Image 1: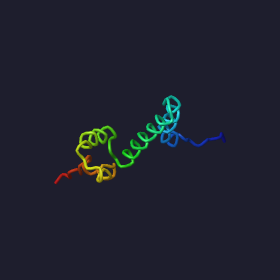
Image 2 (image 1 turned 180 degrees about the vertical axis):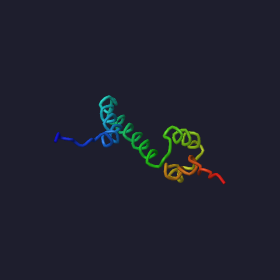
Image 3 (image 1 turned 120 degrees about the vertical axis):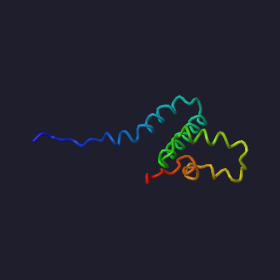
Image 4 (image 1 turned 30 degrees about the vertical axis):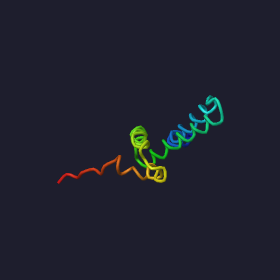
Amino acid sequence: MPFQGTHNSSAERSIRAIVLGRRNYLFAGADTGGERAANIYSLIGTCLLNGIEPYAYLRHVLECIADYPINRVEALLPWHVADQLNPPLRQAA
């Protein structure tokens, strides 16, 4: 019976962004650039975990953050705006 190794393609796919990010951090130019890139990757990952398209989320935040009170900026986090960006699906009658 030939050896049938396990396939890790789903696991490899799930960490692909992390691996690409780690490689890109080398070219960030400075530690602060790498930290900012890591923050953006983290924000994008949080959007994906909450079922939000990252581009739509970033567009939403950038459109309203200028007039937003600083003491309520936490309300702009992905899990708080997920229902605004993903309206519930209507069911057919």
